[in-house]
Image (cartoon, rainbow, N blue to C red):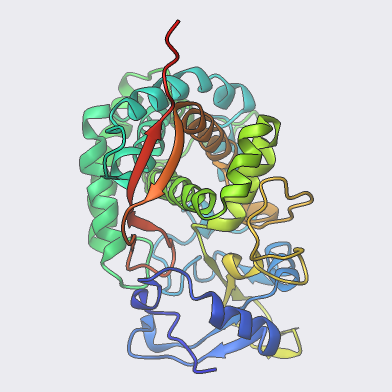
Amino acid sequence: MEPLDLSSGRTFSQGFPHAFFTWLRANEPVWWHEPTEATPGGEGFWVVSRHADVGAIFKDPQTFSSELGGTQIPDSKGLGYLLNHTDDPRHRRLRALVNKGFTPRMIGRLEDGLRQRAQSILDEVPPGETFDFVPVVARELPLQAICGVLGVPQEDRVVLSEIVDLGMEAGKGEVLSVEHVKLLGDYASRLIEEKRREPADDILSVIVHAQLDDGSPQLDIRELRAFFNLLFPAGAETTRSAISGGLVALVENPAELARLRRDPSLMKTAVEEIVRWASPSVYKRRTASRDVELGGKAIGEGQKVTLWEMSANRDEAAFAEPFRFDVGRDPNPHVGFGLGTHFCLGASLARLELRVMFEELLDRFDGFEVAGEPTWFNNNRLVGMNHLPLRATPKAVSVP
């Protein structure tokens, strides 16, 4: 099969190239990607596509470092203080401080507010008329939720979301372009100073003032700014893509939609299947800290290694009928939230948002119809739709 340029966002402008990765898993599960004109730094990188190999890398942070180069193909400027660009012991300290804001109690108490927000969002859906599902519904709940978590005024949410969207669309091989990261970080600095002066009832305030029992220092402004720049795009964009991707999967698999309607207890497994199916964060990057062999290939110290979660989540060796959407799939060992020490910090929040939104969608509407071709972000790191024309048929109101 003709190789694809995985360092270019254009390769993903029609969605994830499943056919190419199916070929890789069968023929070149650990494949050397030569540099192209689009490859940041002009350096080639390894592409790891099988579930077992991806899991092995996630579980071996000593050999496959996040701190030596970052988690995307271009080297990061946030090494050593951005949570997902650190190794232990730095990562352990940062994670322990940030976890103080993400306790089960803190996340659990968000459900009532999220449900009210979801209901208000669905009030804006024009019954039976074509509308753009992504900005009207899929974007709004994660956006409102992450603003609530971070104590961002709701009136600022659209401006911040536009910064993130423009940064993703830049197509420079990064989650966000450097200039848009700076815009987001400048906003974060102002917000963090407000939380220092006047802490509020939000998770960012908890993290700004968090301190460990061992006397470790609080997070400094650079670490807090980096945390905001990590969490806001992740919270706003990945769950949005899971909501839109999950709805399309249900529309394209009407028997599974009917099954979920008949048995709402399947919602828990349905949420996991949506995460597996959509896998909005499609790859991570690590750097080899030593010479190592993987899949019969010799990986040299200092070389970039990319592990592709979306491919792992379609691996025939790990999932029965991986290209079948199954709301009751169990077991479902997907890696949509990662594995090991860098398991997604916001996984519980994302699961809660997905459950609430799909419960409300199914409660409110009898049917959904994709009314046009969706369009996709020009981004190879967070792959998802930016527009989805849809028609939703509301349930008939019974007259007593």
